[in-house]
Length: 494
View 1 (cartoon, one colour):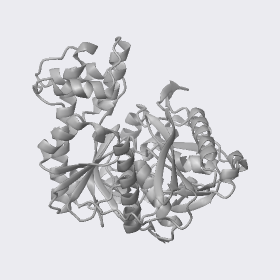
View 2 (cartoon, rainbow, N blue to C red; view 1 turned 90 degrees about the vertical axis):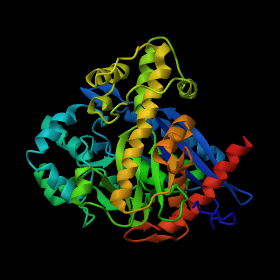
View 3 (cartoon, rainbow, N blue to C red; view 1 turned 180 degrees about the horizontal axis):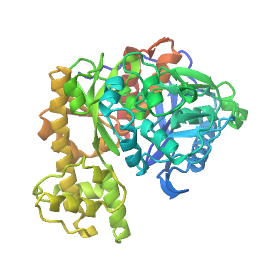
C-alpha cells in the first residue's frame, strides 16, 4: 500500500531547504518551505543540459552547469528570507570530474555516451574478466560505468589529477563540501566491493588506477560541510549545511516513493528506465549475474535491484531528428498522436547497443527492423506517431519481461508498480505497461528525485541517521509521504 501521509509531520527548524537535481537533459533547483505548517515545493530554476562535441569527445559544459546552478541558488536566496538550512545535490551517475590540487576540474567531463569506452571495455576485460568484475561488485556490466571511463582516460594518457569525483559530489565540493563519494552513487562506478562496501583494491589494481585518488566513501545523508563559497555572502546562506543525499538520482527517486510492504516494484522512467525492486540484501547469484541485474546502493543500507532499460532517450533522439526535418513535436502532442496509431507490427529490441548511441535514431530503428525482416517505417516528421507508438509498445513489453525476472530473482509476489520520473506523465505508456505487466500501476511524482532528495535532508537534519548506513529508510519514507502529498495537492489545485 501507499504510506498514509502524516499531515502533522513538521521539522523543528522550518528554514528552507534546497534540492539540486542534475539531469542529462535538464538541471533543476528546487526550494522547500514550510508555510503555515505545510510543505511547499517550488521549482525555482530549470535549465537545459546536453553534451556536445568538444576537445576530442562528447563532453558536458561544466561551466554552463555551474553558472546555471549558481543562478538558481541566488533566486532561492531571494525567496527564502528566513534562511536556507541545507542544500543537497543528486544527479545522473557514472560521469565525473578529474580535479587539480585546488579541487577545480582539469577539463569538461566526458559524457557516458562517448564511444571511447567501447575500446576501454574490451581492453579492461583482458586485465580482469567480466565475470570477476561482476563477482566483486554485483553491478550490471555497462560500458558507461565510471570504471571503463577512468580506464579510457588512462588509455588516452589523460592527466590523472589529484582526485576524481562524480558530478553531484563535485558540485558540493565547489560550494565548500569535503571531497567524497556518496555510497549510492559510488556503487554505479563498478568499483565498490559488494561485501565490504569499500573501494575494491583488486579492480583498481587490474585497471592500473590509484585507489589513493578515489574520494572517501560516505553513506547517503552525510553532512559534508558548510556553504563557504561566494554564495555564503548572501544572508540566506550564512549558516547553510551541505548534504550528500542519495547522490545517485535513481536512488533519490526510489527514496521518494512512499510505499510500504514488500509486494511492489519501481520503474524510474526518464532518459533511462530503471526497472526493479528494493531489497534488504543483494542478489548476486549466477542466475542474476547471467541476466545482468545490478545491485546498487539505496537509502538505509538497502539495495536497488534492477536492470537499465533504454528509455525516453529513444523518443528524445527522434524528436531532434524530426525538428531538423522541419517539425517541432512536443512530447504530449506525440503521445496523443501515437495513441491513435494502429498497434505496430513487430517490436524493437530497445536495448540494442546501436540504440544507445546518439544521432540518426529513426534510421537506427529502421536498420534494426530490416535486420529483423520487418518493413522500414517512413522516417519523416509526418510519420512520428508511428515511430512513437512502436517505441512505447516496445518499452512496455520490455518492462514486463524485466519485471517477471525481478519477481523470480527477488522471490517477491509483485502486485504493484510505482512509476516515477518524467516518463510517469506518459499516460499512454503507463496504460500499455499496466496491460503488459498485469500489475496495479501507481503514478508517482515526475520530480521523485527532488522528493527523495528533500526527504533524506529532513530525515538526517531531524536526527534520523546511522553512522554506517546513513539516513534511516523508514524516516525518509515518512518524509517522502508528507512531501508527495503536498505535491499532489498542489497539482490538483492548479
